[in-house]
Length: 96
Length: 385
Image 1: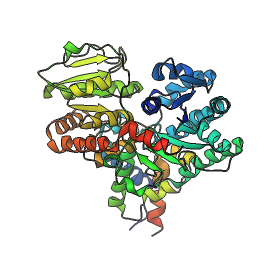
Image 2 (image 1 turned 120 degrees about the vertical axis):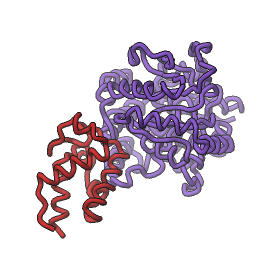
Image 3 (image 1 turned 180 degrees about the vertical axis):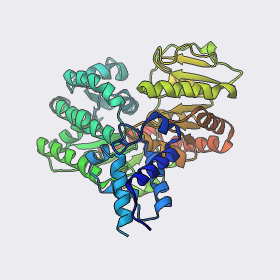
Image 4 (image 1 turned 60 degrees about the horizontal axis):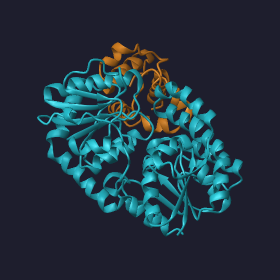
């Protein structure tokens, strides 16, 4: 696999969020690296689970969203951004 | 005859189940007293009840002011708010009043609501036998298993409360003597995985005085009827949700009976009956299903009437309880902030026409009845004396 391109991964995450939350989210929120899962997207717990499943199907078991969250402090979870998820996916894919 | 002191937060949904248990204890000749905010307690436990003031009116004012912020919170943010701005300050503010209540009333057993942590602290400090009253089972199934550092954070908050009160550190959410859970195995899942001092007694609903006016003749006997309640109205998202449910229900020939403040549903269409408050327990025998935010009390009240649910969890324990409803087969989960008309219409249609959901709701009802309710809770409390 070629090195992941951060802007392509951001686009992937946008598609993942539209898949999980419905296409309307792309109209309602301009999803950038700074977009927060809690404040800006108000992602529901069931959508977090679905997002994890979607990412695993797309990238394989290495992208383990549950483990990514499990390592976080309460404040980190509250302020989790799309950019941080993009970086995590990039790091995971590079590490192979 | 024994003496029971109930320590409760200023929250109606937490006081009502305790009040049902207290009435049962009184009918058996025991003495009951309360520690909490008298203003909230009095209308629920009666003017003759023995009430010790615990808490702080100033804290009520702070909470009232931060309410709008709370309504915007979900998930981790709501959890942090709950502990930092409600549970811990309430415990600190209530502890002196609970100590006074113990000195004066001299209870044989203290019953502490899971959110009235001052009760647990004072009981531990005084070496009293105490029980946890858990009005939701949201904390029972390790909800933070996927976020171990969040559980650590909660434990740090409890450890500090213990140190400040001069008691050994422990999990103040669960008494080591008795944990009363107002649910049953059919909803929470295999109850036998919990220790023997966990008592799953089912909902304690009996004899709650509602005293709310309702236009009974306006119930449409020609239609299937669905009760809609979100507990607290949740800002713009709540307004959107109500409008979506109303649009979803219309072509299905359903009458909606909705609890919502004035103005939230402007110009309600003919199939929507809106009142600021509903006499929920009296209405449930007259409806076919319930749409709610998966608050534990409303879920259990619906299931106690064998009614299937559409659940739209918002925050706190609600996603956990919604998961229990779905796992029990008694309802359909939708997304509070994003479900569209089609998704809600499908959910309503499913719970009203699919006999499996109705059957599962009836199975939970039987399990609740078998669990025994307030009398079973009173039995377990008597055994502590």
